[in-house]
Length: 405
Image 1 (spheres, rainbow, N blue to C red):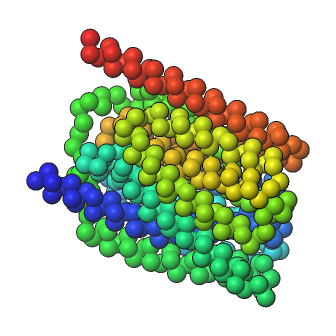
Image 2: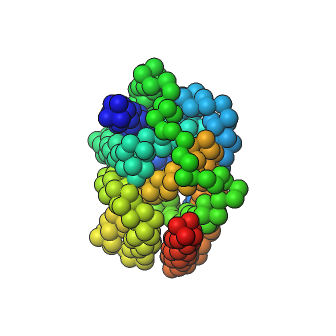
Image 3: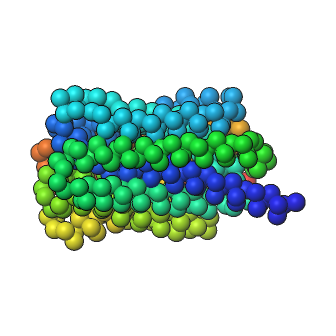
């Protein structure tokens, strides 16, 4: 019986992964050209950074509400279908935006993030329900690998569209890319309805765990963790800002910027699998390792004007992204009871998004005056997060000792 449930859990997580593949193919393909697209239609460096940061903030902050709704109603599939529809269908509409109304493009990019906010807590909760059968780290890692495979191929396709149509102006090539990505948005929605029909109640994969006694308000470990991930978010530079920098300095030819993003997503997928497995073995220490690696991203990208340094920086950025996607959510699954899981993910995402937004705003402002300042700010934030994660590990060890006495 247990083997049969485990098999069903594996098939279900693979199904979610395939949906994530097509979803990320669509929105990460689009995201790979947001920076240079906004640049072409007249947006400034500040607007690009502001849009990236506000988009992440909205996409994360709204999850506090959508997470609570998912837990209260248990309508996980409804939340996912609505969210994916809003998230993905905003992308082909970008093909219709003219330079004279660049602010409409900004609004559509923000709407795309709203859709992700609607679906994400429910999806994370459903993924976490398979943890007893696969391990929290591996459950999120498997989903992330397929997710990032799409995130790798989507920008790759965009690269070929942009580079193969050199006779067209840059804006027309970007608009063509958004239109073609709309096809993959439709495929994602079709697969989502199929998955719902086959697994209408995936929450049954996990039983109530009596070992997780604390809810959310009195969960000190969860609170310390929220503070730690705040600094991780604040010091992590979003790709549109990196793309803007590469385009402005011409360190990398503009047609290769989506290709580099695709490359980063490939690194992300490999990193997610490695660190997801590592998390199941050594816990939060795996997050400390990945954060220390990711902290080196900004020095390589912003302090050196060479192709090699940018590529190294992108690799480090991809490692940080992959580890974040697999480990950060896995930690929540270990700290929060099943009944409050979507709410926990909503709180986690809201906190993470708020400080990502604040960090992006600060980075965008500092960027206009000092690249060294950007590096100092980003690295300092990551170092502080590592210190807090060490304190969290010590606190958890102390609690374990008290419980065994």
